[in-house]
Each structure stands twice: as structure tokens, then as C-alpha cells.
Length: 59
Image 1 (cartoon, helix red, strand yellow):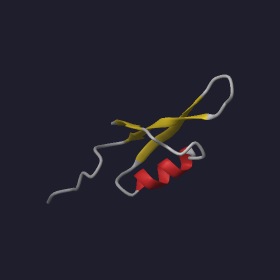
Image 2 (cartoon, rainbow, N blue to C red; image 1 turned 135 degrees about the vertical axis):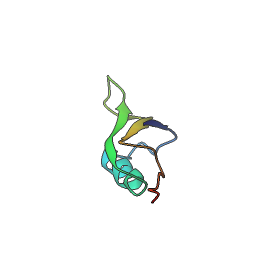
Image 3 (cartoon, rainbow, N blue to C red; image 1 turned 60 degrees about the vertical axis):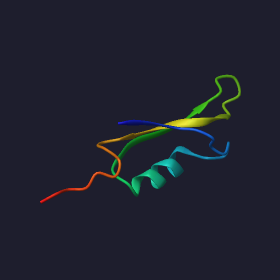
């Protein structure tokens, strides 16, 4: 599942997103989208989870 994350502080790093979303399930990747010319964050990104967020196992 790929999750769109917006309204991020421009200093937020992919590692921070991975840590935050890792509390809710396995994170495959976390990417902050950057401006091609300046390399600065555009304030949004994507987090890819291996499964569904918040999913719990049932007996």
C-alpha cells in the first residue's frame, strides 16, 4: 500500500517518516519528493507499507 503524506515540514527526512509509520506496520520505503532544480523538499512524500496499516492478526 502506497500512502501519500502531505503538509510536511521542509526539513523532514525519509528516515523520519519510516520511523513514524514503522510503529503501525512494516515500511518498505519512505520518500520525500524534492524540487529538481533546488533539491529542496516540496513538503510531501510517499510511504510504502508491506501490508495494510493497522492490520492485526487474528487467531
